[in-house]
Image 1 (cartoon, rainbow, N blue to C red):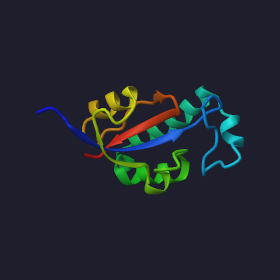
Image 2: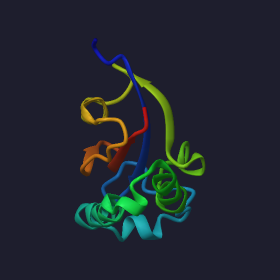
Image 3: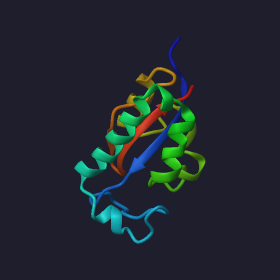
Length: 123
């Protein structure tokens, strides 16, 4: 059958070109404004490499990273949990990636209008 919804977690890293370059992690925006798109990508790739290690390849590790690093004020404290995402709810880049992941997979770094993300599909 066609996938209707996925249980998704994400980590958002904003950069100086993000439309709202502040977050609860960085209320003054000092770090975000000093961060290029490339350095945001490097941060996420470093997290992704760590998560590829079998020891850390699980939702708990992903949630820990999200709590410590994500610039998403809505989900960071919940470990990046977006809950069940339905088709048509997210921007296309995010949706396409989330729906193409297998359960338990971490995405490559993707870009949306707010910044760069890693997505973990938990269900």
